[in-house]
Each structure stands twice: as C-alpha cells, then as structure tokens.
Image (cartoon, rainbow, N blue to C red; front, side, top):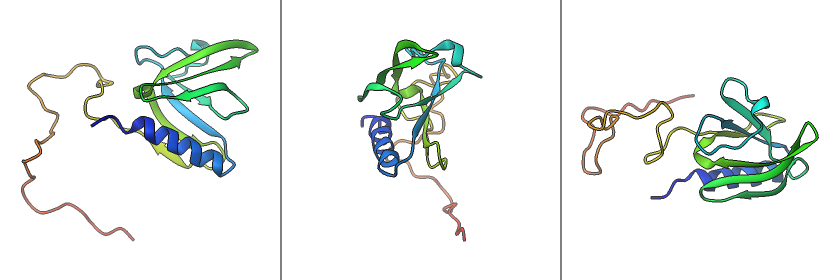
Length: 137
C-alpha cells in the first residue's frame, strides 16, 4: 500500500485550519531532498508555520510538500519530501500527530542488515502468547 503520511498531513492541516488554529510542521532537515532555510535548522530539525497567512502556494502532494515563503524578508521556495515530515500540530494547543517510520520508507538511522526484518512478521505469521493489551482508565 502507499504511504498514509500525505493523506494524514493533508487531513490534519485541514482539521487544524478548520479549528482556527495555526498548523506547524516539524521537518527532519537531514533527509535527502529537503530544501529549507538552513540558518533556521536546530538539532537537525526545523519547525515551519504552514498557515495560509505564512506561506504561498502550499501543495501537499503524495511525495512532497512545497510552498514559497519569506524567511527574514528573503523569499524562498521550500521543498520537503513527505518522509521528512516528523509531525504536524496546532501551535495554540499542541494537538496533532507525530509520525513514526512506515514500511517501505527509508530508515532515518541509516541502512539496516538486509537479513534483519526489523521484527516485522509476514501476513500469515501471528505472534505467539497472550495479547499485550491492557485497560487504561
């Protein structure tokens, strides 16, 4: 299946705007293809306001998010592969979503042992033992 990340980013962006809040995204600036103002990158990440008042021409496609904006008065075209979007949230209350890694997307920690499946089971394999769910009140 295709990645769910573009659909979730679009949905959360719309939901945040519908609730009259400001959508912010957290981007892993180290992912190949990311084009952001490097002077604003801290600890390998950058937080960007993607509200309609802050950006122009926002397009959230299935592979990338792009827009134009001004940083310190200097216009810039921003390009972010969606695998680099770490989170999307509302500035006002922190509501949103943090994304984990998805099957088929590059491992942010680098290549793994090709014989290590990372603990993923095939579709017909079931875990043994009792379920590990518990009630949370």
